[in-house]
Length: 311
Image (cartoon, rainbow, N blue to C red; front, side):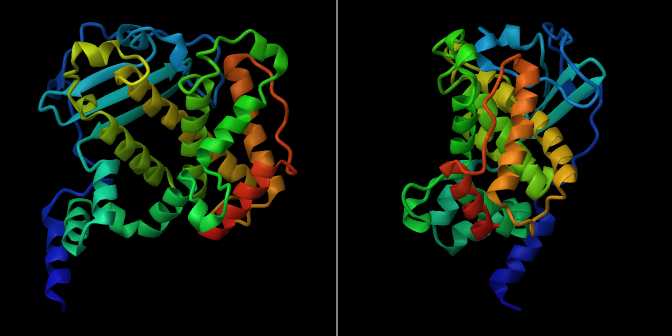
């Protein structure tokens, strides 16, 4: 057996694996948060919870009215939960490699790649799926032709499909990068990863992204500047993580509806139907109307074709 490979296998068993089940925690493991009061949403149903819009919150304290945040005393993780009447999602963000670590390993030598594999064998086991997601998540004109499309473009398309009447009543911020576009991107992307691959892979990708953005999310030890930065501080990151959870739940439902798996042939009609289900969800949550997505739209044709190439 190759010595490098043997060293890798030993590391897999010695080091903690990201993406694997962690120990059960009790109340004694957490830091007490004196501002931990969660209000229930009014608009709910038995299956879906309510995705959140960043522009509705002006501070971390306001966000805590809908998201419960608990930090582990050893500063190794944070637990989030958000409730609607009879419907709750939870998320555990633990320490581990971030998106930047994977980018550095991809550009580094074999030792960089092996060390990351030892730290996170989950990424090795799911390399094919993660490579597909990376291709779908970025515009790569040099590989897929110009102009290429990515998950972001699907979210942008749905923003453009908001009815003209509702758009006139929206603020510039609501229609900007950190408004509906951000919510649509996180919910829809997380849902598609869960539908096509698995919920654990959707978790892995979302967590790696947020850890790279702000490592302090695990400890709650933010600077005053970070706390007051609504667009790029913890308010944005915690909200994104909860939206990812609602996306996974929706992704599981539409997966069953359309019998989606990694062998699914994505026609423009299927992708349009899939996204229209999300428009229906967003319409219910935010009480806004949408023009339907149609299979003859260029972005839909391009993205369906790209999905069939990379998955």
